[in-house]
Image (cartoon, rainbow, N blue to C red):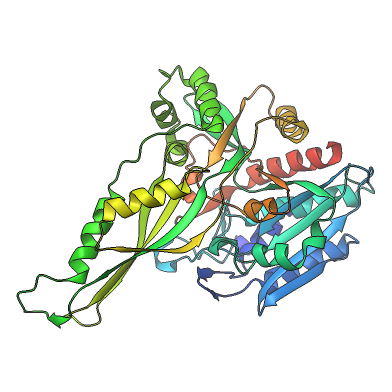
Length: 432
């Protein structure tokens, strides 16, 4: 039986359909575009009796929104948002075609299965469950699907917030990706609820030297200078610095692991999730690109590197000062893109509602706050005073390296986890 012949629950079928739209985003304005995926979403919303609105400020970079009236319209609206773009996938590195939406071993495979066409599908089908039953959510819902999130939202959510703020009238809170999923803590299961995001600073290191023949005795080589700077920055071991969220995360995880109280050691005891969680405790500076030279026997006069920097909220200036000190005076540090960090308390009515929804569907499993190392379009919504959380609920197998699949190879999500997430999200929207 081929992957196309498999009968899937609706949430997995919608996720598979979305994966099959190649919405690859290379960044810097180089993208396949989200138009067809946005039109698919809009058609789904229309079948539910909703009226989608589209906003395409740049050709093919399409955003779509629809508002769902709630039972109690005196309550502030809740934003449910996702993004439709994905990072590139090199087909040769994958065991399946990343844009086929392969179903195998009880999982849906493909670019976007984790980040974040799974959540897009859960949003659509959860709202579908409610409306097709002749019901309404408790409050107004603003369903929004953005372009360009994988490029920091500069051609997506940033332009929507700037030019279509009325889409979010009356909204005070938002739910999106990278939270609500389960991790294995020893032989226990726990859920992570995202209540904050590190700030992003994409920088470019630039070195200059003297161009010359590749055979020459040469002491002013731009590539050599750059290599030293990249190695120094990439190998820097940044110190652990706890915030309110990461301190509470460590305390709650420590009760499960029996840890010593050292946050880094406790996070390291979370198995496959440890790399994700340890990154939330410190600054990270990861080299992601190198550009230099144009011929084997020519020493170039310029070299540059891209560094993905993620810092704790409020430490941006100090981190940039440290970076400049580490790379030295001969290396120019250019900020390509910078956004804000977020952190809100693990408390309040929406947090209580999300925790309770998980408990109703997986009783007795602890829910732990965490500060995500990456970022979401919640940062754009924050400029409108909207408080954002990560809550894409998934109950996952203990041996699945889920966090390692974000931007990774052979990205996949269990189909039963999608069904679980749809049930939890539908429950939340009916009651909150």
